[in-house]
Length: 343
Image (tube, rainbow, N blue to C red; front, top):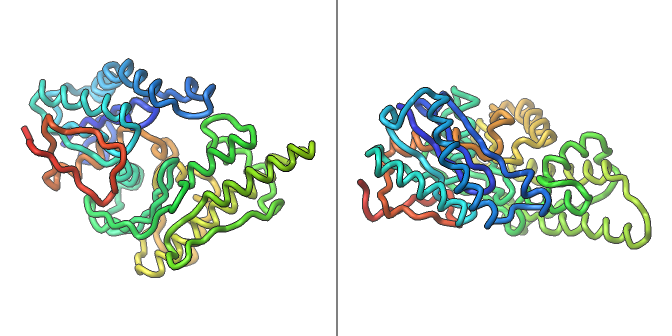
């Protein structure tokens, strides 16, 4: 089976053709990073306009690279939630148009489920059940993946996501957007023990996270040093902050693994590219006899190959959408799309 995947949830316009949920035939991404960098973050209105300008060419390029036409497709998978509503609507409406014109079934896909599915493309032997740490700019979840379309959230952040904390701390340190990537590189040059930073916990919820206090602590540290006319060693501060965030992630994931008895740990989302997080979890899994899976770096960020991969499993589970499909800005990973009509 060949699926076309379409992704436009934030600032990447992407399209991909994937076969049987595991084999990438093409993957095209039009990034807006350089345009948003001058604003220090994604401007939703600009993102939506750029998606509208790029999506026709991106989808056509993905079809051409895969050497297929719409007639060769078994389904069209599109990210319908969660994300920036204007950006999502561009992808959803374009996918609906393609489906209507071609008669190819339309499959709605949850963005976070797609990030999990990125691992199926890198690790073709991976099958549920497993525990997954989903870490991105907007989400931090510990999820039990019982099956390809069955997800149960064990823990999540109570405030900032890990990626959001990285981005805001990086901005305070004077690093460019996207901050998390540059902070990770800077941290590789520093001493992670140079600064003592908090490791917040959530009382009574050992699998939940809280990063707002940690983020505020490092921002206050920077402000105080600025007021005193002192310059902090940025590499050391970045390394210490990264260490604190990763410690919190690893602590809760280990607790969840031991509580559930799962033997396979997966990471997904943009922050799964973090060098320290990957190293730490690899060592811990090896020491505990757990299998460890992570997506290749090119699949950690937003892309359409992961959408097509998850779309394959949603299609196999009978999920379809009609022309009444709408984009949803916020949606639980455990929820399914409800459609009033299916073509």
